[in-house]
Length: 356
Ligand code: COI
Image (cartoon, rainbow, N blue to C red; front, side):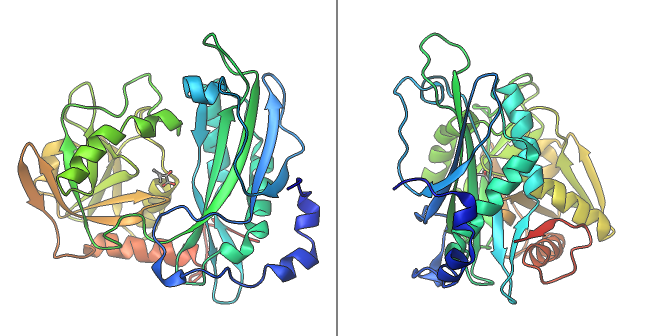
């Protein structure tokens, strides 16, 4: 299919046509890929600026086997969500935060990046073009996956000569197969996710390939995911493969501070603000693995994960359990406020959501 200009796609005719919902089983969405109608593409050369993005029919893309992203991992991704409200609006949660994070990551990975305005406009256009894939209220969300990659051909190790910014979308439900039931983590003592001075603090694709081995081993033993420790002291909590971690003790909520090896999650940041607005004390600091032993609650946060209660953590063969099979009191309160904000069910005093 030939590219479609954004303004054409966003015309009234298109919006009317896509006001119906796609014909899928909305009651059983997991976090699996569902192909949708359109994707957004924008290209630029090294040293140049992105311009002239366009929506295209969703489909495979063509890359040189010598593309920088395929050979040297020069790539970043983002994740954000759009929600359909009861009164038919579509809300996007904090897209400018993803734009800023992509720009920071691009700087680290020697890539040009779309401006915040270009990113947000592209995201809005992509959601509108795929409106029929935004789940009905309460059934899930439309997950947006912006990618930035070195698409030009290289052979010697160097930044690629051309870059592609792409956004595709997929309707999603809960990330973990447990749904909103607690997940079970195992602390990894051998393999590490990130090193000081490395790329753990940016959303580069290689960070995610690097956790697959430990994650697969953990899953084979029945755990939901892996909790990483810092690689220097092998003692301080870092994050789970796909989300940040919080520990609650006596109504104080602690989470590892962002110091280059931990992904600065937008849900993490939002939960910290929500918790403070609810009167909780929140500490961003080094959190030692021993603190898990007498924590009242542990929970994870992430765009895909949202807020997920942790039911147990196993470290060096010793298992510590939390709660009684559901959310803890604190995580439930934070989950409820955050998701009601995202779904437009309570007043958005922080002005976090953008209405399409
Ligand atoms: C997200 O939460 O959006 C992420 O990027 C994590 C990913 C592994 C699903």
